[in-house]
Image 1 (spheres, rainbow over the protein chains, first blue to last red):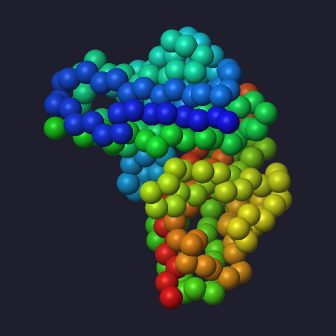
Image 2: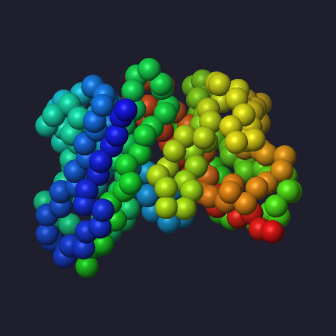
Length: 113
Length: 110
């Protein structure tokens, strides 16, 4: 069966420090991968998605970047965190055989101080 | 621009009462709509999709293109239905890019 792992679950970082959130999917090949941010009162905002290795589409201009170094690995990064980067980040994957069905990770809560 | 609107942040109903979670959308293409649910301490997960026209856990949702709505309904609410519900609209294309609404918290009380 397919699983998605996301880590770390919780992260507290100072302003100006770098960020790396990792997400891996097991049990499937060539998944579409997504990073969402979940903010109270604002729902889920799509940040990045990827349909293949090295292919990244950015949906919202921001201080963050994403990379896909391997088929089932998706990384969310920042060189210098801002206070406004605080939030709950969700990784998700989907298969072409089931359009619109996203499988979400457990999320990473980032607090920037 | 694509947009999904869920006007209610919180909906509180009594057990056994009917439930209707509202969702309206704006989209220039042919819409594909979904309802996702997040129970306490669980991951966000798909509840149902409009193209399946299915009933999941007693919930149904009908796409009304004239009113651009996709309201989620259940005739008799149960305590275990208490959760956060998100309506989502899929962009056309190969990836499953979804635009989510802001969510409605359903609280079912005795």
